[in-house]
Image 1 (cartoon, rainbow, N blue to C red):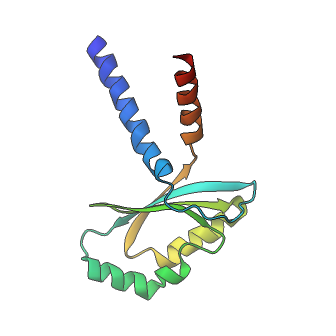
Image 2 (image 1 turned 90 degrees about the vertical axis):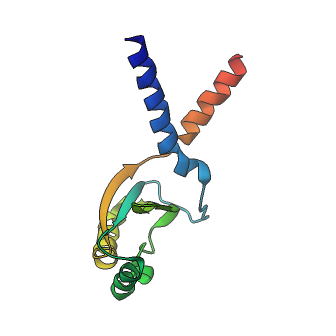
Length: 138
């Protein structure tokens, strides 16, 4: 039973690290002000595996992907390629702009990607504080 607990703890630590990686990288740090009612959303845009990169690019160009996504109200927190999967984009938007984000995705992303949306929050400040407290107590 002790081995199971150790494996469970290791799995939890690995999961936390995986979830923290985008926050640690700070890919884009715009100085745009964000309303206090803003929300963060991570969008997984999974490439359609039956199409090659040129076909995907053609669909995105036809849909106006670069012109329409993300909408002007969104601030990009990070934007990664997950090899073999597609693109992962984390945005911060005013809550009132959620509908516009959805419309931008429907108009410009569909056809090249299937999408998944995840409400997101920044855990790094909590981890950083816990690490500092741990360091102080040693």
